[in-house]
Image (tube, rainbow, N blue to C red; front, side):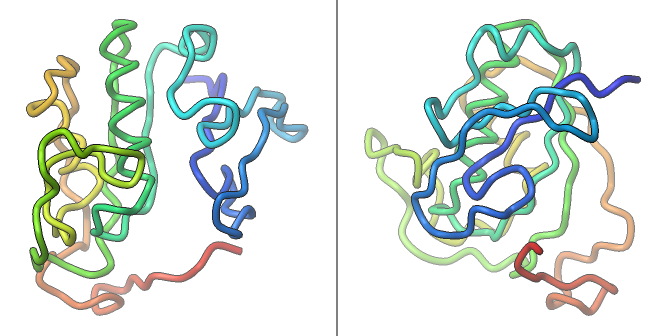
Length: 170
């Protein structure tokens, strides 16, 4: 397998754009020699040209378990684009650092936005991989996401108790 491109969500590929609402441009990664496409810059959804740069999409983002976290909307948008382009999507399942509790009001149909990807409660209690499966079922993205257990992750445990902790990127 060869890495041919990368996508950067809000806050950049490396998490170095921490100020809110700071968009980032596309760039070529000097170390890897691949294009890095910003999905929080000129566009929020992958373009046809971006989708033509790879065959398999691997999504590996950290989610916070909260509906307004923009990474889940980015996940929805890339899964929809993968389905439209006949690409295979693979979702990694990093732990949800705030656990399984489900709380808050559910977003109303028709009120979706970049900080509300779908009809889900404010605190959804899912991992990003589980959200990917939900998006595929809910919005007919029609792409198969393989299921894989998240080794060492016990959803009922508090952050850090399974040898993992949540922290701000570099």
